[in-house]
Structures are given as structure tokens and as C-alpha cells.
Image (tube, rainbow, N blue to C red; front, top):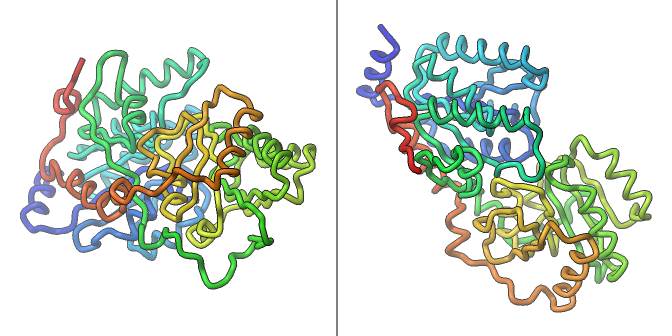
Length: 398
């Protein structure tokens, strides 16, 4: 029986939809957290999930996703350059064909979605989804990077049947070529609102020091260039100069950790900054915090920001974070200004007790993971049993 015949038979029998998610990893970063949240709330009788991971290393959440019924496949380390890309591409096609019937391929790898959607098209998968999790790169970009993004966006336009993003700006960055936009949909990066709530655990989480009168700042994210970690340290230093009773808790790891530690030492912040590393109890830590710092250079949405606000934490964020991420507790500050400006604005808010900010329940409800899962289930089943198309079916708009 051909692939199309199997898909049609599955549609008639009403068996579970088989969805292959292609991800860079299943760790504590945004995409890994989103995928884990989704798996926690899927109806397994309706959806069977496979994960293709572009790394050879075991991931933080790998054992948990297996417990939730997902199969984990490995393709190749795409960070190795063109050779890694080719191995990933060939293995992905083989894995899809070997499985026998996959109803949808859902790619979470930004511009690289173009390669994954092309592989899915060759393997005759009817639903091919490009999911944008980040905004477009800003500032000066080299010609090689510009060429890469153009080629990938052309592939996405031609090969994806569905184009979704976590925000309008994420869709604009990935699903647009010059004045031409392709049919897109916003699907909010949902979280478990029953888990993230402004209720403190009975005991103080490990690593959190409850000193009387202390103002606790937190940041959650990778110590990578896009998160602007060195600027964050300088901002906190300026805040501490003005308000001595502050402490920063940093959840996350990354390639710039060494530089972050050196700057912390240089500014004499060792006693005021706690580097907690990757944690699985973020939902327990956040309710003990007062404010979040997130001076990112770009964000598709900022799932950590949604989690913090759900826990009642007020947030100071860069103006590169999409407005959709504001649930009522965000203060946006211009990234073009220096650390002194940021510190002065933050301290003004501290003196006012963070007044004027309140969580908007209606906006928060949009980020309930249950709503997100229902939207995704509809998309995965959109063309079940049909041969998907490319650019003509996506809706080209000038």
C-alpha cells in the first residue's frame, strides 16, 4: 500500500495522528520547555508523538518525554556544518519512510525549518509545519547569513503547508520575504497555569536565600549572546549601587557562562549573584522572586516571561521582546540605552513598589497550554490523508 493509501486508511479508522517534531534539543531552553509542556497535556489516544533531535547527546528532558509516550530519534549534529546538514537531511527522510506513516512533521528550528520541510515533502508527509519561535535577527548581518535566511525562507514558502509562530514578530521574521507574506497563524506558547501560579511552596527552594528585607531579582535563560547576559550583569551592578539590598538568581547555563562569571567577579558581585544552573523546579522558585530581568536582543515570545508573570513576578524587559508577552506585569526598556539608564528606571519602580502593574487574567488565559494543544491538534489533522502542497496553499500576500 502506498503512503497515501495508508494515510487514508488511518483517517477512516480514526487511529491516533502521528506527529514528528524536529527539534534542536529537549533541554530547559524555550523550545524544549514548550515541547515538554505540550506532551504533558496531549491526549495520547488522539496523538502519537515522535521526536527527531539534531544532537548526539542525551537531553535533560529525554527520560521524561519517553515516559510520556514519545519516541526519540537522533539524526546528526547540524552544528558540524554542511556535512552535518546532509547527514541530518538524509537520515530524516529515511526515518520518516522507515516508520511507514507519519501524518505531520512539525519543525521547531527557525530558518532550518526549510530543510526539514523539504525532507518531509520528499518523504510525502501531508502536513508540514514551520514553527517560528524567534524574531528576525537585528543589527548588522553578514552576507552569508542573509543568503542563508533567504534560501531557507524560500524553502519554507515552497515546502511548508502550515506556517505558525509564537508571535506576530516571529512570523514576520521567518515567514516573510521582502513585501511578500505567506499565510500564517499565531499559536501561543502555552504553559501549565496550574503549575505556574503565585503560591509559594512550603519550603524555600534549594539555592534561594531568604534574607529579611532583600529584593530578589531573577533571570531565566541561556547565557548566550541573544540573551544579552553581560549587559544584564552590568544593569544589576548599577541597581545594586543604588539599592544595596538586592540579589540576583540566575537560572540557566550557556556558552558565555565563563565570561559572565569573570564579569561578576570583576564587579565584586559574588555575594549578590547566585548562579543556579539548569533547574527542573523553576515553578517553585519563581513565586519567591520579586522581579525578573530579561534584556534580550531578540525573543520570539519569551516563555520564561510568561511563566514569571503567571507567578506574580514583575518584569523589566527589553523593547525587543514582543508586546504579546506582556500579561500586565512588564516594564519595557529600550535596548539602545545603557545600563545606567536601565538601572535608574528600575530603581524608580522599586521605590514605587512596582505600582501600576497588575496581571490581566484575560491575557493570561490565552497562554494556557490546554488551549495551545487544542489549536495544534486541529493543525496536525488539517490535511490528514491528503498530499500537501506548498506555496499556493499557504496563501501569498503582498
